[in-house]
Length: 199
Ligand SMILES: CC(C)(COP(=O)(O)OP(=O)(O)OC[C@H]1O[C@@H](n2cnc3c(N)ncnc32)[C@H](O)[C@@H]1OP(=O)(O)O)[C@@H](O)C(=O)NCCC(=O)NCCS
Image (tube, rainbow, N blue to C red; front, side, top):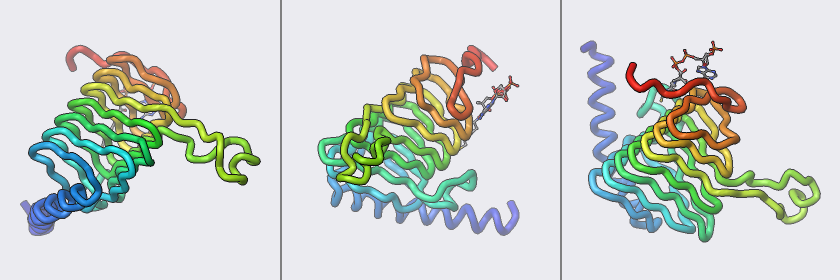
């Protein structure tokens, strides 16, 4: 291992130790429930006006150095009455999850660096509503089912369910639900092929 790699590894080790502790304090202050063996590298941005819960063995990277693949920070944001539920053995890097109603991430899901999950459009598509109180904003729950894998820099939009063990290609914008065991990619994401049984 060269010196640069050694320094990087050592910094990340220390960063993991103190930011995991920092984030746990932040969780308590923000009413976030977390399970056993939570680890993180980098400080999360958390705003919880609803319910946020993380299962066991959740790993979150939340700083540019934590995952050289991309992204800057992990954000968990719930509006009043909304929820983000993350299952067991979930990993994510510099991901933004914004919940107006409900975002569910089941067990064994991997979410690639810099991806974003929004269950709302944030603003009405009608200018009049947008400019006068921002009413008539569409929102619908998002679910990432067990064992699915979202590539880097994807955007998952409102109302989408990503199927069990499905895969979303890097840089995709997902506007429609993806059935179990399929690979989808592109903007908007389209069916590419089935996940092979063996590789
Ligand atoms: C989706 C993915 C898994 C497919 O890999 P693969 O099985 O080797 O598939 P191929 O490279 O043979 O591509 C099959 C087809 O899908 C297209 N495709 C693959 N990935 C794509 C993507 N991200 N966006 C758009 N199209 C894509 C290819 O162009 C090809 O199209 P064609 O049949 O018309 O030539 C891979 O391309 C990918 O995006 N991996 C995610 C990497 C990543 O972000 N990791 C997380 C880092 S934190």
